[in-house]
Length: 330
Ligand code: TXA
Ligand code: MG
Image (cartoon, rainbow, N blue to C red; front, side, top):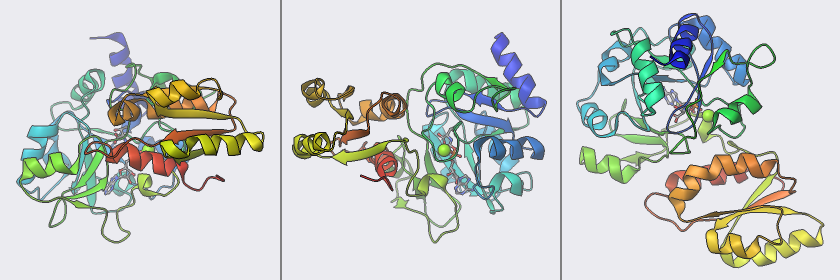
């Protein structure tokens, strides 16, 4: 067993906080059954205690440990998408305590596919179904981390920082948070868009999939309008408006950074502080957060993003972009 993995499991079992790599973003993990440990996640992130956390498990065998009244469709979903970036919300068992679920009668479960974290979860499970609660490893409201360095820069390691250990698993390959699917109601309902799309789920279940929470009950922090936000203003523009927008900015002595389709990024490279080019919506999805981290620190006054064309797979990245742009002065 790798020494790093051994250390991470040991820290988790002792009630510590470990930043774990997943295929979506880095998570800030604690033993999901240890109240003090879970509470320290909220403190480290400065996150409101009413926001429920996702419990990360080693596989579908852990579902009965955490949940009850599981509909038969769930097996189709776990067969198709686990391990992978799909979080499933189900009616909770006694084991999923209020300090994890924010007092709701449901629990969110996810089985990440990152090999290192998958191995960690299987070691932590003890053949029973034990899991770790883990939100994204960033200060509440800030850009989610997709590298270990992002976690070091934001939360850091004790004694100066807030985590006990950071397990470095390289760069995340999906780049945005998991799709959240509520399976606790009468029909499947997507609460947060991600790489696994409604079309993909609908095909596996052979039934329609709804969008959005009913009422205000499930408190999905990613559903707050301004979230995943850089410090600087981020503005989404269409390709035709970019020249006009940048000239307007220049008249106000504002410098800008740019995220755009590659050809446009190349064309504007000389007039902006820094430009990032993407090939398609998926390429933008994978790099969005790391580019936002980088461009936020590059000295530009604002970040322009040229929207990718709408496609079946762009819902997740368009959702995160619009939240990153919300409530900013531009
Ligand atoms: O990809 C991901 O899901 C990442 C990685 C680390 O696994 N985790 C993540 O966690 O994005 P977090 O806490 O940043 O977002 C989880 C979202 C929260 O907005 C929370 O409100 C929602 O999941 N959630 C958790 N339990 C829920 C429940 N029982 N019902 C509805 N939403 C729930
Ligand atoms: Mg988050």
